[in-house]
Image (cartoon, rainbow, N blue to C red; front, side, top):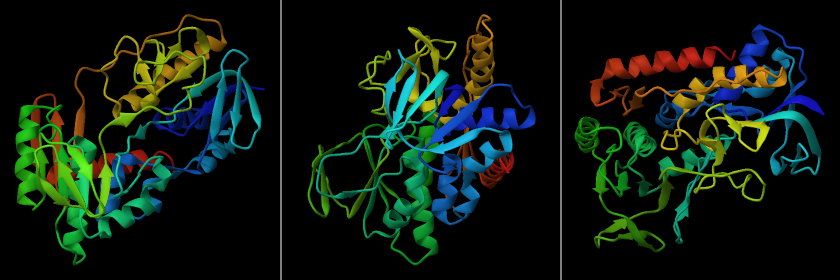
Length: 357
């Protein structure tokens, strides 16, 4: 049995490893992850466009654990027994703990039909999958949020730079970036049209055949491969456990990032919903912000002291790579576009990656 068991190598747990590396702890800490590497989604667009190598967008979690004095185990957890404080991996091995924290991210829902669909989660499959997608004859991205827009523009930029036909299509049930602001939506529509992307917004896929999609509005769209980016879907790990879940299957935690009925179970990042802030977007920004509270509360719990609450910021800065080393910054209702925005994003991403070297 270990004192602290960290499941997953997401942003919050990476932050904990960095803290332990700087200041050793007396606890026995183990991290379990399905992959030796954690791929940084913030640089997926740059990798897709060909601006970064695979080595530049990944963090060696096993090496970081070794530097921090944390035991690393490569395994995938398939069963949670919160009552008896045990987890079971695909290997059949049981892992006991005093306290466990989950930071395993989320999945992306797939669509029915016969057309080949690309899956980019878990994130360690991303490099191989995106290679296939960006070379396909008729690539179609489904989803008009930040992820869908970024990937469509990055694939388009790569195709333009490598002699492929620039025919990326985006299908979205709402206007692009409409959940961000009207200004962001208006700007991104101008950008995608300028860069030659075909957008079918306020429409949905109704039927798929081998090389074609049919939408609810009757549009027929050539499609050889499909990349669904329609929002976060809960991991199946918690479905058969006794842990409390929200209506969509995400692990439900309190503002302390604890599960109410099992105070020795914590969670952060995309795999959880916070009861007091159920509408909080599932993105890396909030996982990074949760990490200091998560680590402090883990220590407070193990020493029997009152825990603190995570209070999310109301506004946050977001920078999208829109291809050809240009970026779109959004903050609240504001949106700004230009090369300087991409350079700022590049600087932030490099700073984040350098923390883990």
